[in-house]
Image 1 (tube, rainbow, N blue to C red):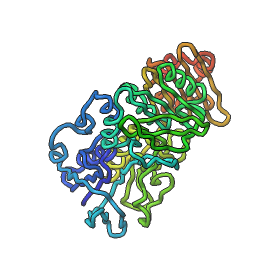
Image 2 (image 1 turned 90 degrees about the vertical axis):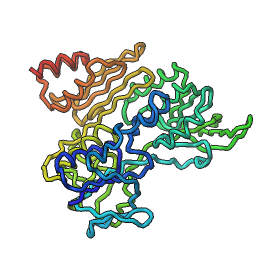
Image 3 (image 1 turned 180 degrees about the vertical axis):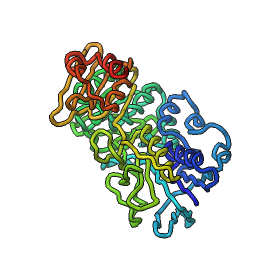
Image 4 (image 1 turned 30 degrees about the vertical axis):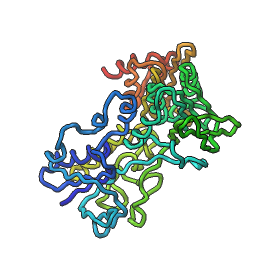
Length: 415
């Protein structure tokens, strides 16, 4: 028996280690496409700020970690999958046989259709190599334009601010964090950023990037759809991601937004599983299928897929929308069906002056979604109330009247 895990991010690493715990003898091969040891993309902003070095991004810090667990780690890129033969065709002509396969190939950043994005000085912030390039350009006082104001972009935003750059953010939607925050929350985060010296342009599109050399260095001019021109030493593109599934063409594996998997994380082809940002798996809130490209989901996927591969049936209850973000000291959180459900009820409390906001969404007597902004106390309790699916009884009316009493509601239902 040979288990092969393709993709060496958090999902793939946890899966390989879980397979080894479940099966002490079977051959395990972990394939990573990038030249560095397996690392966490979520650690890259800390590398940008100098809080950690490159080694600090590595998922496992001990030398020889994979060897000690008898996991064969190798660099390679999978070009195609021959499911009938149980074989991966690798870039450069090699191949790798497998008996069971787990695909953890993650996602890649989307390149918007903007003229000039292929010029020097334009980078995504997705890989360690991207980060190296950004560090070389994002010096103190540099003019930097960040395209996008979603979750990933806002993590990058904070790192760039800490580097002392003159930062401008351009978001085509009308608010920041449009997939994580409603208008109240998104506008509050925008005001917070502007107060911290960041130029934030929402409801604007970048139409073109022009070269504008000057002062002995390469410069760019970023053109917006309202005629605004922004100078830039560096342009960082963070306009979303898409699952890495192109190599599965012709394999028989069903792919929609991501690789469609069942509640054991097995794909439409027996013996092939998927996990992480490339997997379209069960959604806790909707009962449907979704790609939730967040690290906690990726880790859960990897562990549960590995157990099922190893013959230990473990159903997956579904991933929960779960985002926690610290934007220059302003903490924002979204859990579950934060936009509400049909026929549901909502309770909100807003303090604009203090940058505090709480929104609770109910379906009958159950809490199904929540937004929180400007508070750090007990926000994890909101997640617990949602995942427990417990009827709130009399506490529903109490929370509708005062959403701040969610901790009391949790304690009452934990006894």
